[in-house]
Image 1 (cartoon, rainbow, N blue to C red):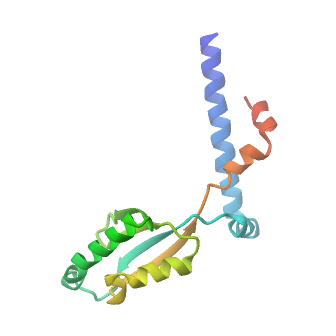
Image 2 (image 1 turned 180 degrees about the vertical axis):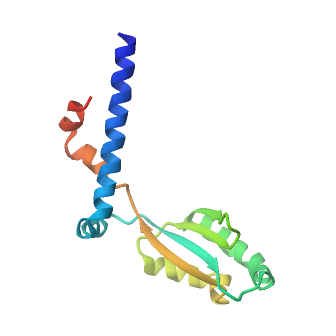
Image 3 (image 1 turned 90 degrees about the horizontal axis):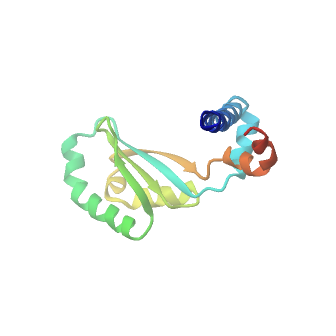
Length: 147
């Protein structure tokens, strides 16, 4: 009986994982579906990938870093920077901002010392709740049947 319960639990996890993976794959392979999902998705933050511009030296960046760190800490304490990371390749940073749109994220980044000095390039990615999870809530009876 215990082995049957473990097998059922494992099978349920596999079915849920496959459902999420296949749904995400479907969204990525059908651009119109993916665009509709993004358009209706609530944006709860913007991921900003900062990269040192070509031709900018480490010395140029380091001269501005004390002011950049102080300003970024103020944004963190004010709730605008949710998370921040160093890039593994050493060429910049990644910030998760608490904003509802890219325009606000751009304004924040342009106001920072590195932005004012035009030393970094920025890529902006709006993010929100994981959409495939909504499928679990939309038809809970179908998921119970997969158990």
